[in-house]
Image 1 (tube, rainbow, N blue to C red):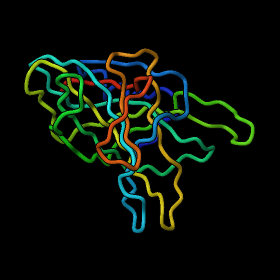
Image 2: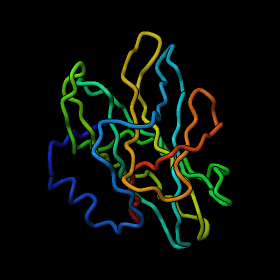
Image 3: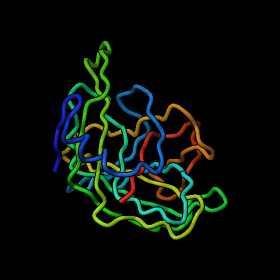
Length: 200
């Protein structure tokens, strides 16, 4: 379930202001980024891209909600039906075993940036907030990776635009990684992506 919000929203602010912020990587102004998408529609492409980014966590963290920024390179917004949130172990700077996975169909989508591009029209970047159905309790202090993947029909008879995770304005080493039509074969990128982790 998608709740569209244009501009600042008292409901959105109330939903995230009470939670303690654990970690933040702010976005650049953009309307898309690295592809991270799972197309589960009949005849669709399936889970064809994923992006992970690293963060350092304390032993007592319980992550209850995630904020992130993304969008589509099109003037007509895509029909995103939800997001899959995953956390992976990150010891030694590599993407380790998956520790948590949840599909989230309820989310807020707030336009935070727009620009006009000849040939495309007005393209928009969005800020998203999702509440995890069950908090992710980090097993111990250390490094972890987060993955955000959009659920969007693509392939077969569907032609929804690809969703991209917006770049962060700084890099917290190691940089983010991505696989594209090569599941699990993560390749380092030259950037990080923007997200916020909030306590449960």
